[in-house]
Image (cartoon, rainbow, N blue to C red):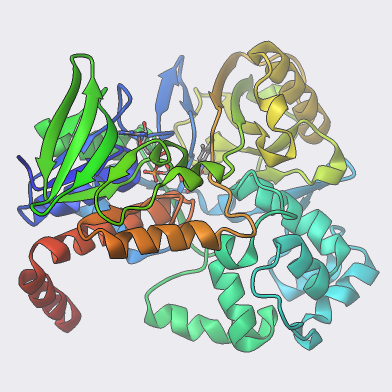
Length: 471
Ligand SMILES: Cc1cc2nc3c(=O)[nH]c(=O)nc-3n(C[C@H](O)[C@H](O)[C@H](O)COP(=O)(O)OP(=O)(O)OC[C@H]3O[C@@H](n4cnc5c(N)ncnc54)[C@H](O)[C@@H]3O)c2cc1C
């Protein structure tokens, strides 16, 4: 049998498998569904390109570009239009650019003069004792005030996590923000001083990171990974149990032929936390993964609408807009897909991708597609001056979309770390542990490959690390 079992064929599992195979370590990647990629899926219809889930990869780490290059995908890589660096927030039903310079901040209509004064007090706010794991809302209220929470953080969090700032943990959902506040005592000061350290680590902030996709959409990445892995990928095959004995791991899988047992030396768990909770881990001193079921994954619906260019009054110059909860629209936000990348709509048309639900209103996400098309159209009429009907529409529902790193997430992190320590050869990696963005998952998969290789061949791994450090 192949030494490594990878559970889950999302971008984390695929990246890990690719890097392990590169080291001549054979793997078997078990994917429960009929296709790899998780929410990454691209549909091209009538000249419109609809991304089911993610639209872009934020290139925050050099490991992302390295994977793209090593897969030979540089010629197919597409960086976003520079105009797409502009983001908007809806206030009083109108789009207002998110200020990104001191001058823009001074003149923006997004915040009242009183709110701007309150924001500028940030460097003087001291951290109260006992605020180690506080919610993002409490943190921002304390440091930056109510208006910043309502008109910057609330929409921003909906755009990234489809989450609720009152529940998300600063420490676990925004670890860099937490570290900056802890280290420098101020976000403004830390933003300024932290730039040097980021440069040293060759990292860029998400505001400055390139937004990346491919000529035929994000699915190009997962399709290419799958093609490179060939027969190592077993589709429609769920892992239901993993038992440790003195030799290694026996993994029980279920496919259309029934249940079978496979032997492996290491198991890398890259399925979502709610799926991992259902996998029975057996062996001495094993802890149940059932508590992972308590991690919140709200439902999100994604609506793509295509319009004739002349039917949209707004010039769509930017990445898109986010909607604060206080604005009471149905959608969480909209990306201007055909402004970000060139070939997302037929000539003379535009493609707009909107999201509904999340923690703000998970029930709304599950309503009938026709209702969601209509609600999205109404919101776009209001914000973008859309006239007439869409000439293209597509709906996708993610009943359990994105892991919420809520206050108290530390106990899940501890459970994973303790389980890894107690069960040599068992590893956790993915958006439920290493951060929810595609970039995080791509890096997590590659890092997990190094950890697994280190477990199987400790001497070779340490030699490779020394060579990589020297390079
Ligand atoms: C609507 C939406 C929009 C998003 N937009 C963006 C964006 O624009 N940019 C961005 O950076 N991120 C975005 N994200 C987040 C990003 O897509 C995910 O964080 C990332 O794809 C997670 O990858 P993963 O490999 O960790 O997990 P997943 O992609 O969830 O993969 C896990 C895989 O495990 C499989 N599996 C489950 N149980 C088992 C089992 N028992 N045995 C075998 N296989 C199993 C599943 O079928 C799945 O294929 C978005 C997410 C959603 C839902």
